[in-house]
Image (cartoon, rainbow, N blue to C red; front, side):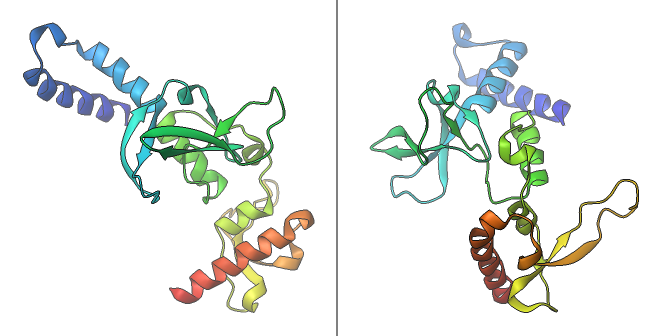
Length: 199
């Protein structure tokens, strides 16, 4: 994948160099360094109507200092052509301000894969280090036998007893271990069931 990316940068550079004056031309190594900096520090720019779609990307030096978390305490938006960072939870003095770089409505393994492929790091945030039942629900499908309170989730394998990590088991909402978040999970399950019925 890295070789393919370097070839793409090289082809783009060849086209760009034809348009630039001689004093603005750069070497392939400089172009790759620049492309890496853009890839790891750029953020999507939304349209002025606030729709969830990017119309481009830009580098915002101050925002580029903020790290990713799958449980961020801030978000960025655009207002009158400027990027604005807003807290979405109470942030204690001295705490790190974090944003999300990817779609958070994905299970842990998908978030990790996307971050590795796009930003070249493995997330070690508290949500990734201690996945909850909510993450299991993100990759679940509706259970036809249990009605609205059941989902089929991939059972995490026991490395000693199990050889098939792909087996799915029915896990009704009442059996999920994260009791404190049960109301949130019930809402998530209702949304999942609605989507199952719609498809």
